[in-house]
Length: 193
Image 1: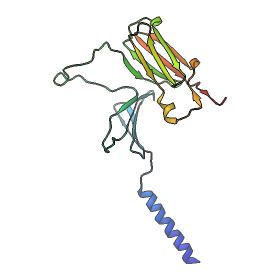
Image 2 (image 1 turned 45 degrees about the vertical axis):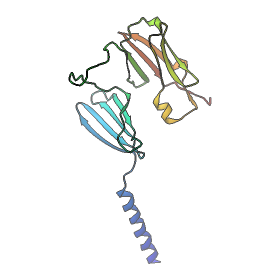
Image 3 (image 1 turned 60 degrees about the vertical axis):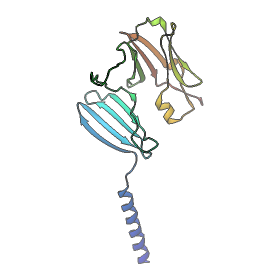
Image 4 (image 1 turned 90 degrees about the vertical axis):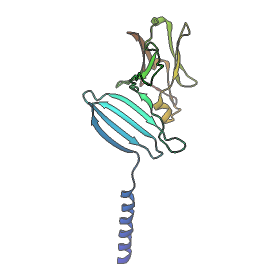
């Protein structure tokens, strides 16, 4: 009987050694630099996510993700919130995009998912913003057919919750200082109701 207890305790201690030697996923590290708190999360499938928060306001400034390539290399970063800071290099960048092109980026608030499109030079009545209920996407278009954009909410796609629907009353938008601001409130409708 004593040998059984000792065997159980030795087997349980070997199990805890095995558990402690393996990394638990998701694995998150954090660092404070340049006035930002940065969190780097690695998931079991190799996907990585980096989130950067402002130290003073605790506002989410950047969220980017990348998946490993098929061959196991590092993939490219895809920005969900914020954007990539691009620096013009006159020696390598012979052709650069126009500075008047619309710039699409996401910047959330505490109560809304929010997207901003800078360099929108048309009047407010030119823009049409609505919800495509079939694909659960927000559609932006102009009456003069100069701009068209479709996008979804990555958090809804990632959670795979078909019961939560994007509704028209949750969507609001405004045009201010040549910036089209689109907000989706958190009043997303549950399809079971």
